[in-house]
Image (cartoon, rainbow, N blue to C red; front, side, top):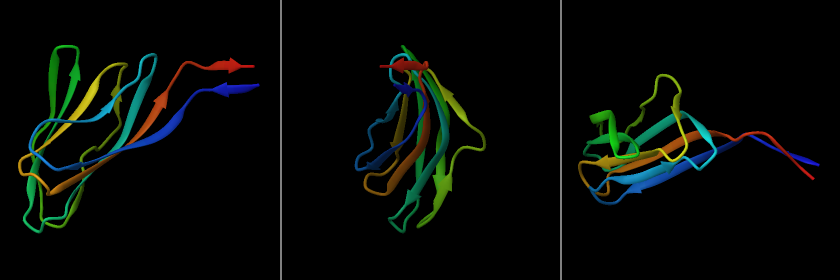
Length: 115
């Protein structure tokens, strides 16, 4: 018998345009704990990023126009962020082709014993 439960994953995006881009959508029957959101500028020019959490029709700003210096990596979170089922974490770059984003995520599902 196997026991299904918690899974560590990561979500990665290269922000190639300036539209809101889905970084992560929490699956049904799951709670996620975002442990880290790293943003890297590889352009040599610096940029800004906006991070939002969408829950149904509500949009919550987590970081609004957060500066990322040229050729640096910034950790956005100072503590874990809980995301509930069907909520969506979105990222938006001010300028295309400058930022990469990686989130480290723990997905928590109800424990099931599978025969």
